[in-house]
Length: 447
Image (cartoon, rainbow, N blue to C red; front, top):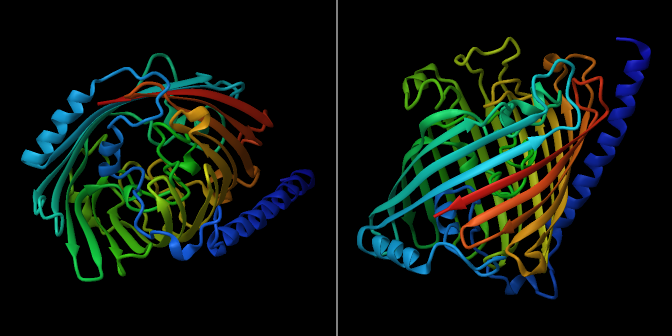
């Protein structure tokens, strides 16, 4: 590599370090601020917040709420009937359809597409079979089946950023597999005098337990990978695992969570096959966090995740598939309807995640404004920095910067639309472009 290129890369690292410092400063403010909008921390009702991609949150989120743009759609009688089903049989369920379309202003030479499009249909149930009426020590069976497919003569969003754009950001959730069982696990709650413990075991994914960042649901909120599935952490796909969440002192917002998952689970090729657990190749994650909660949608949050992953032996692992570890620190601070957030992730694992872990340092930070114009949803702006792993991407790979802006709009009682745009600066392995714009539109309907 020539002197000029080396100098360029060193210069690129300077703003990256500055952004790290900004992220740490914001995170410190999020952690130590005790007063928000005139409310003393002692007066705050400190309880556990809902994880945005937890099956319970997803099912409950289907129920219509105030703040729709057009108050039309599925009638309330349908949801009253669903309540009766739960009251009589303990069964909650939902069906959802979501679509993502993207278009890039520029792509790598000889790329087949400058557009990406995929859809995703799913059916989800949560069946409370133990102690439903008591509300304590409940035992629940969770099942979901999903169909994720490419649409038309377009690229697949899950690989669009890497293959066609030449960057290291992906849209992990909009991938392709046919009617795969993604969730199939038992969830048991244990209530003690001052403690509350949740345990899961079965087919699952770690991202529904770890990292409860409130805007991470890629169906309606951010689209770019580092904000959502966050592939800098070498999360595996759906597969056999065990997870827990402990509230050691009820009445406070302190919690501990953890997840262990098979690195080789693959809904696309292996289906519901747990035989790969015998290989002893796992993802490990432990999270410690705290919530300052004022109401259901008004809270502050901070957490630290320590994670590790072994090599993965299935799915044609690449030569740079290496074990590693890392940590991720995230904070959120809310002022009335304004939410500030920042996240820093350090990683040494290489390539073993669901779409390939390609970055060793990732920073995201931004701001969101909830329910603009009294329409349920949010307008959000996020900035990101990613440092590619040179052993994978090569010595000439550039540090990548990006921006994503979107508006999540609750259009009707059960339809959401999210227009937005992603701006990519210095796509890591696309030396022909220094800037690429990727507008997108997302659609979701759920009943």
